[in-house]
Picture (tube, rainbow, N blue to C red):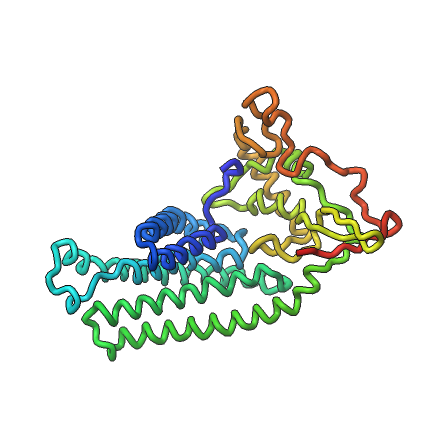
Length: 360
């Protein structure tokens, strides 16, 4: 909230996790399971419409993030088909009015959730299509894993929907509607499976290179409170429903890089250093310097026309002052502390012979 970030598909892995937890919890503890399902559904209905619009109109959202659009409605459909299904008339012929109403609304609700899932799938395909010209030149990175789990999650949801139709609807199994649904499910399942195996295989091949970068000749990126965006008070410019620039939070992350634990081969000491020699920041592929400079200029021009409002009484936000007391938060410089090793950002072999590698 402090950075004015708006919902986008990168938020949906949390929604998927809550939905899966709801199904597994419901098997053993029904009431907590229903509570988790309600949370998952609420997040879907709150975030999915905003995310749908933003991905459709904002070309600056990356293709990997846009592909995750299908995740939220898919997990909601999967959870509802299992947890909300009514009892069978053969098992409970003496149904109550509530159970009778339950059977009446179950399938219409499933149809609506399936339509939302297919809409999410279409939005994901559209986002990749319109961004393909730029995305095909991107180097393979950990962000490509975003193409795996949303696709298989969507296939899993369609499979659950097929089961609900076979069990509770009057549609004969050998009709053109079921043939279309079966073919759609089969194509998504096979395509997602092949893509997952290919991406996972390439991921494992690239893993040693990603976890052992050579940082000896890299100038250490600035701390979050020392970046150009922080100095110009552009970090809290925030997102808009339609915007011509990359999110300031993403630009901030690209400028400061990642904080990694490294070991010196000379004396074996451990230390934390920042580096930009990583391929992705979460599900966002890392930008190069020319891309960062171009996007920073676009953001600077937009901020000049729409200056951000300064926030107060907010903790751990660069450039923000506080009034919670004499010693709480005053002069806060961010979550990384107040020490900024500006004078020692150049890593050279003569100053310790460091050739760091990631540690797990």
